[in-house]
Length: 273
Image 1: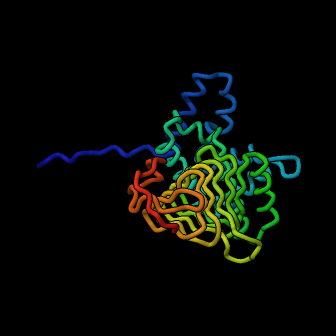
Image 2: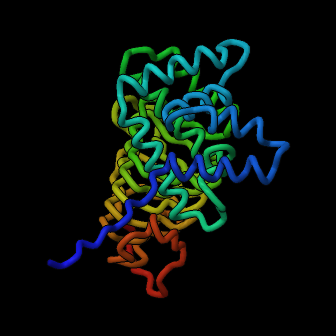
Image 3: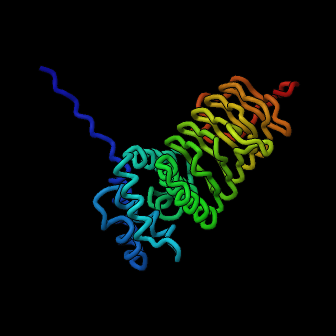
């Protein structure tokens, strides 16, 4: 009878994070207290994440303990929030060549931290607790220089690289596996109310300083070059660049948000999308 091959399961994000924290505590004793408080003293990712969000977001008006209770309520009511955070950690690990372990984004990367704070604020928004949701948005903007309206819908497996200056409007929708760099704006084109912000598909790459404006769709696996201003829909799998944005390559590569390839094709289409 042939032998069955046993394939070891890949360690999950919490296991990898704890391992990195243990190593860091040994290597840098001056930070051991921080690492223990934020990670090693907790039994799972949800507990550590609630502590970290509260530690960063607490202030004189709303203390860390109160924020932690809100996070716990959110995670218990909607476990997909923690699952999305785990996917976000995995996204950073796969797409950022600068990181050494999951410890860096969890402790220090403001793109990751702002995104997790937004997920709690969005849960509050869905519960009709808009005042507290706005408080968290304001605090997040002050701390991280990232402004995401609490009503905006953000997918899982997102990578907000550097993060500074990202602005995402109220009716924006960001699909799963999207990568965006600093200075990205998903905004409106005027003062009209209603559904007025972009819908970003799965696996899209938004380069640094890209501005996508209006209730338009950027199709799955599209790429928006750095500094572009997009005012019209972008077909799935295409690359756009310029002010106003023009088609540069269509189709483009299969998974631009994963490869983080910001280069452009040599041939530029001679029409505005």
